[in-house]
Image 1: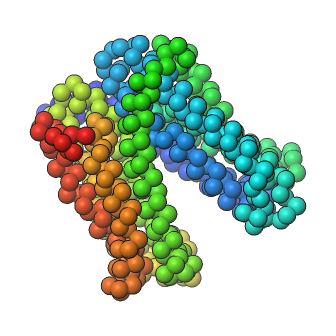
Image 2 (image 1 turned 60 degrees about the vertical axis):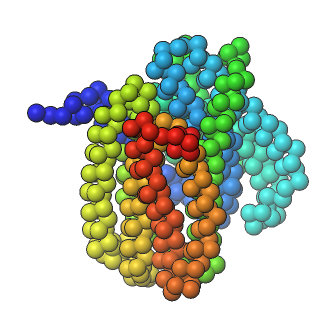
Image 3 (image 1 turned 90 degrees about the vertical axis):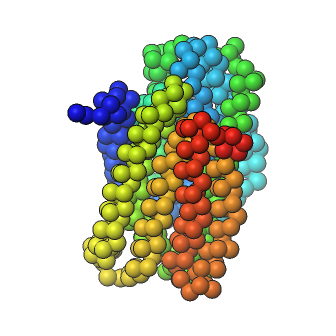
Amino acid sequence: MRSLWALSSRTLRIGKNIAWLLVFRVLGTLANLILVPIALAYVGSEGYGIWVTLFAILTSLGFLDLGLGNGLRNAFAESQLKGDAQETKAIVSSAYFVVGGLSGLFGLVFILVNPLLDWAALLNAPLGMRAELSLLAQIVVLLTCIRVSLSLIGPILLGDQRAALTGGLETAGALLAVAAVVLLDRFTSASIYMLGIAVTLAPILVLLGANAFFFSRRYRRFTPSVRFVRIDRARALLETGARFFGIAIAGTLTISASSLVVAHLFGPEGVTLYSIASKYFGVAGFGFGIVLVPFWNAYTEAFSTGETAWIRRSVRWLIRLWLGGCGVLVIMILVSDYVYRAWIGDRIDIPLSLSVAFAGYVAISGWNNIFASFINGVGRIQLQLYHAILVAMAYVPLAILLSRSAGMGIAGVVVAGSVLLFLGSLWAPLQYRRIVEGQAAGIWAR
């Protein structure tokens, strides 16, 4: 007799989301890989390098929502469960108003500051490209500000437990970008300016269409309106979003610091070794991450309706899946030399210690994310924020200590992250258990 967990509509919905997310993520990854040689053929190696650097700098502007997207994700899910359409409309309207306002303000400031920036010098590009790069930077920033505002449809879909659709939108944007660059390569002369506009505008067109479609159909009752903007709703979203934002920023700083530490201690060759091993074992983390995405707001729904038995069964199932994933990581270690040789040839020798370190890091991260998915879904993230800040502060000194003083080499940089993440492996399951059992208080309940 099959379990109730296997038969529940929520579980079936999660399964469908995971399957479609996997399809869309694979297609999106392939589209991004295909875009590289097409863009290289269009603008050449130097032009592509300049564009990629500029794009990496400017697209980090996704922080403009200050984490409010995740706050909207949970608030939308909770208000939907209450069946209060006006409350949901106020939440959506307030979110769009705040993010749109912040993005617009940043865009205005950038217009004023941009003439003072020498993008040719910043990107080490030919001086003759100064005017073109300045105009491109301004347009990309303004388009990115628009994208950040339109991207709020993503958290709404996630809050409505339609995670696969968010993957579909991302993939559609990537495919449209590929099509645009193919047309540019065929009908226009090489231009970084045109490449930048095409790649930046493609996902915006998809998001614009998605907003128009969903707010004219499924979410018509919740279409953003200035009349429904509420200061108290905006404040609540910002408070929750600020904590998600703090966690994201701390994580970004830690990831950025790892490459800098490796570059400083072991030079460019060390960065190459680190990057290759990271990409190889990151495949396992990527796969498990896809599985976890739909659970976030499924937990929001289940917790709000008191279905703690379903939550426990879900977590147990994820733990079993994680154990299977650990077995996969062991196999990945055993065959790593063969994979590296087939992938990059004999030019680079990846130390076994680095492969083992990355496998351990992915395993610990996966274990933590099982419980973080639930904790995020119920919005009790204050302890997670403190942990993220601690990791960001302690990571660099510990990485240097293990790499140099303890003689662990490049693997020490990875082990340092694992040691700090392991703290979460202790408190996260405990917080999960306390929340589910209704015994969370103080920091455990915030």
